[in-house]
Structures are given as C-alpha cells and as structure tokens.
Image (cartoon, rainbow over all chains, first blue to last red; front, side, top):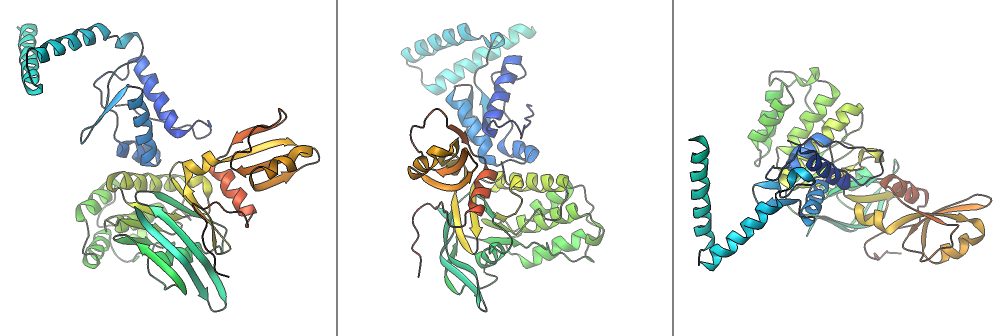
Amino acid sequence: MLIFHLDRRSGVATYLQLVHQVKQALRLGVLRPGDKLPTAKEVVAELAINPNTVLKAYRELEREGLAIGRPGLGTFIERGLGARADHGHLRTALHAWFRDARAAGLGPEDIRALFDAVAAETQGERTA
Amino acid sequence: MNAFSTTGLSKRFRRKWALRDCSLAIPRGRVAALVGPNGAGKTTLLRLAVGLIRPTAGEVTAAGAVAFLSQEKPLYQGFTLAETMRFGRELNPSWDGDLATARIAELGLSPKSKIGALSGGQRAQVALTLVLAKRPELLVLDEPLSNLDPLARHEVMRALMAAVADSGMTVLLSSHVVSDLENTCDWLVVLNRGRVQVSGAVDDLVDEHRLLTGPAAEVDAVAARTEVVDRADAARQSTLLVNGDPGPLSPQWTRRAVGLEDLVLAYLRSPDAAALPRPTLTSA
C-alpha cells in the first residue's frame, strides 16, 4: 500500500503532491496496474488533510487515465508509467479480441464468462 | 444544499453588539473555519448556531442533527471512560455505540481509566468521541485545538478528518491559529468586529486573490483597476493584496499567489474590506 507524505513548506498544492507521489510510485514499479490506492479515509487519518483534497487528486489521476474509480470498491491503478508498465501490445490484442467477441454476438456477461473460463484453464496449465 | 445558514443574525449583550447582521451559508460536506481576532464574535456565532443562546435579531438554520463541543471540552473528571460513554448513550437517542467503542480502542485507552487521569490530548480525543458518536450532520467545535501540544493537535485533526471522510458531515470550527486550518478546512469565514468579512470556498478565494508588488509611482493606477484588500507602501515599492484581476501590468510588477494565512491576515488588517458570495443587505 502506498504511503503518502506531505511537504507543508513546498508551496506545491497538496492535491498535486499526492498526484506526483502516485506517478513516482508508478515509475518505480511500487504501484502497478490493478493496485488499489488508499481510501480517502486512510489518507486523511494519516496526514490530517481534508478528504476532498484526496478525492481531487484521484480525479486528476483518473482524468489522466492513470487510475479508475470503482464505486463502492475504491480507486485502482489503470495503467503504469515507464518501461515496467508496458502492456501496450497485450492491451491492443485484448481490444481486438473484445471487438471479435462482440461481432460474434456475445454480450458483456458472455464475454466475462468466456474470459473467466479461459483464465481458469490457463491457470490450470501453469500449475499442471 | 446548505448545511448551515444565517440571515441578518445579530446578538446584543446589554448595550454591546457581539454580532451584527451576519448572513452566511455553508454548503453540506464542507469543513469550515471560523477565524477572527479575540472578541470578534466567534463564540457568540457558534453558540447561536447550536441554539445555546437566542438571537436578538435574524435567523439561524441548520439542516439536521447538530453536535457542539465547547472550548472547555466539559467532561466529568470522576467518571471512568466507560461511564462517560454510558452517559453519552443515555443522553443521545442517535448514539453510535460501535463508533464510540472503536474510537476508544483506537486511542489505546482502557474503559476503566478515569477522565481525571488522562492527558490533555487524550481528554480532547474523548470529548471528540462523545460528539462524533452522536452522528451529527453538523458538528460545531469552538477552538478544538486550544491548549493542546503540536502532536495532540495533529492527532485531533487526523481523527476529525477521518470522521469527515467516513460520514460526509459538515464541520464548523473556530480557531485563531490559521496554520492549523491550512489543508484541513475548505471553507473560510472571517469574522471581525462582529461582522462577516469573508465567506467562501478556500480554493476559490485563493484563486481570486493575488499579491502584486511593483513601483510606488504606478500603484494608484493599478489599485484603481481592481479591488484592493490590503496595501503596504514603502518609499519606492508597494504591495497590494487584491481581489480580482488587474489585467496586464508593466514588467516591473510581480504577481504571486496567496496562501490562506496571507488572506486571513490581509482581511483582519482591513476591517472594511469584504469578500462575500453576494452583496448582503445591511440594515442602517
């Protein structure tokens, strides 16, 4: 879990300090796609800052496509920064696969079921 | 949607007006700071807000349940923590016992300890627990950080911010230490000589104001183009804290962003300046 810190003398807006720290963690590979960011409550209970500041930082990360908010679950890293997070070709291939699946008449739940089934099969291959 | 508002609120104690024609509104979910010099009317406004005293004129409206913690943080010294929490439960129909128990455990305190044996910081946390467990929609705190050491101040603020994140409640707190409010409060109310000078979102106020420094020979011309809150003149150079944009300036001028503390001090130095969301009607 990422631990934020605050430089109260830096003159940089607090929400931007949080944004920069997430980006830094992404570049260093401390945070990776799929990782959950701390909740607003966890951050403010540590730093004693207004919860809206954390939400503003997370909105900025979402706007830049780095994070995604899932209602009721939290905010998750969507994509990485730098060489470690280079999943571009996998993403492109998955995009193409989704398009094919839709063209074949599969709905979202059909796609998820097929996706889960194949994920389970390949998981079996690896452990076999 | 406002959590708290006042219209033309005034309070007179004998012959002295403690609060004059105070109109303000605080939107739901905000953490509002009430600042001003001693004797500005802060405590009077807070006591009116929670209905402890009645206004001489005007109205107060609070949406939903209100909890108040006075500056003295009153607790029975002879009670144990368990007795204190039972006292809270008996007096408050909306009492959240789980929240109270969890907070006492987080503080690492035994329910058997006597209030009188706790440190100042621990007593402040217990007092805060009592008001939080009421599950208020509006929490009003009068100088919640006074008489606390820096670590205890930070810990009280951490607990308060976590409670805000959890519940979405609105907070109105008074303080005369502006540095405690930076990063925690997102709404600012400045009270001076019994009148509201400033009421607005901190982000907006910071965006709208700026510090301009430039040659004294040009200062009057620049000052005429915008609203000057505070002005300091030296022999050759002047500094203006302005509300608004003066437009293009000659290259000798520098513009700087203001912080919350700059803003508060500038208004307190200039009691006639005001930054309010809309013109308020004043009675003669």
